[in-house]
Structures are given as C-alpha cells and as structure tokens.
Image: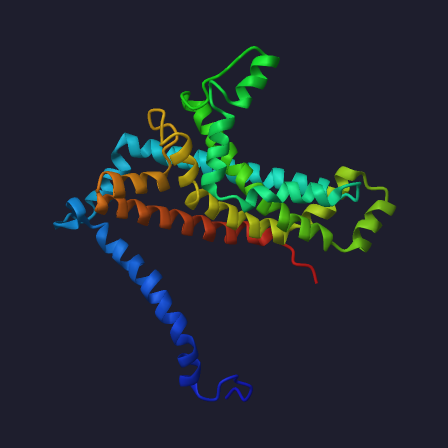
Length: 296
C-alpha cells in the first residue's frame, strides 16, 4: 500500500477531476465520437435526412482522382511548411543569439509575425503577390523583367501558400529555439572551441544534438500546425485553386461541410485527417524520439 498517496480517499481525487472530465466529454470526446458515427452516413441538406452507407464515403475519398490529388497537395504543403519553418527558425535564432548592437530590436522583429492571426498573414501575402500591384512583382520586374501571375499558376500558387504559412510560424520557432540556445551548457561549447573545432563542427556535433529535445518538440507542433492551420491561407489566397492545385485536406473539409452540405463526407475526411496526424505523431515518437538526448 502506498503510504505517500496524495489523496487518502479516491472519491476526492475524482471529484476534483470531475469539472475537467465534464468539459472534455462535452467539447472533445462526444463530438469526436459523433464525427466517427456521422462518417458512416449520407446526410441530406442541413441534416434533414440521414442514410447509413457504411464505408462508402471512405471508398469515394480514396478512389476519386480529385481527392487523391488533395492528399498529394496536403503532403507537399505539410512537408514543405514544417521543413522550411523549422530550418529558417533555427537559422534566425542562431543569428539573433549573437550579442550585437540592437539585438533586442532584431528579436522583436523576428517574433512579431507570430502575434498576427493567420487571416491577417494571408491578406498580407495576398497584397505582396498581387500580379498587378504586388511588391514582389514590382521588384522582379525591376531586376529580372518578369511579372509572374503567382496566384493563377498551379505551381506558384502552392509556393505562395507555403511561404505565407512558413512566415506566420517562424516567430514561434524562433522563440523556442532562442530560449534553448540561451540555456545550452557554456562549458561544453567552450571545450569544443578549445579543442579547435570549426564553427560548423561546433554546430553540427555539439549545438544541434543539445537542441534535439527542442527540435523534437517543435517537429510535433509544426506538424500539427501544417495540417490544421492551413485553412486561412488557402481560403484567402487561392480558395483551393487554380484547378484544385492548392486544395488541402482541412480546406476540403470546410468546403464539403459548409458550402456543399455533404456533412457525412466531410466527417469521413475529418476522421482521415485525425488518423493521419495521430499516425505521424506516433511515428515521430518511435523514430525521432530515439535520437533525442535530454542530458543529465
């Protein structure tokens, strides 16, 4: 028997947990179960009728070429956004960690995009990459004499959506990487310097392994961000176009659920999105987690 138990009476612990359990049940567990159930039905306009169709929604989702392309778009967007935002965030954090004149201003400028909402970030990039009046085309026209139609070209439109998502999330990565860099053990870095290690060797063999816990944490957070927070960028910049080139899973769920009122089909897509994120998170814990060193 554990004589050091915090609660001598188990019902007291349950009573203290009850408010949280009620909130989780009402706003998380019950809607999740309902979504699973709804994905097995074909739902009429505004939910007036429901017909059980089993796995038919999933069959359509995985066999329709349009939806298979949507999965490819989602993979391209997620991989590019996670890789770029983490790599650029780490690079900027290393630069911002230098004690140079005005370093506080530099850090503030790096972090402030994260304070903006995704909708505001999307509007900013909508103006920047406007084919007629955007500053991007103005600079390209002055230097190279070209003015691409960013949001009407299938490949360029995806590039703009990825850049907007990366720019929005860089500040978050900078904050955490900067905090991790400032807490690295100075004696280890000093020992590497005395041993004659080059700047690249010090970064790759000392600094980067010491940052592995933070890198692993940010990998999980950035993956979730890439799958669930892409809606505003796609909706404001391209509306999923041109020709479905930027339609990602989270935008398709909104469109099928609230524009086309295919509620059961949208629920099936929600279940698939949930399964993908859970699978990737478990995979990252089983693979990346082994390379994380927590010191001690």
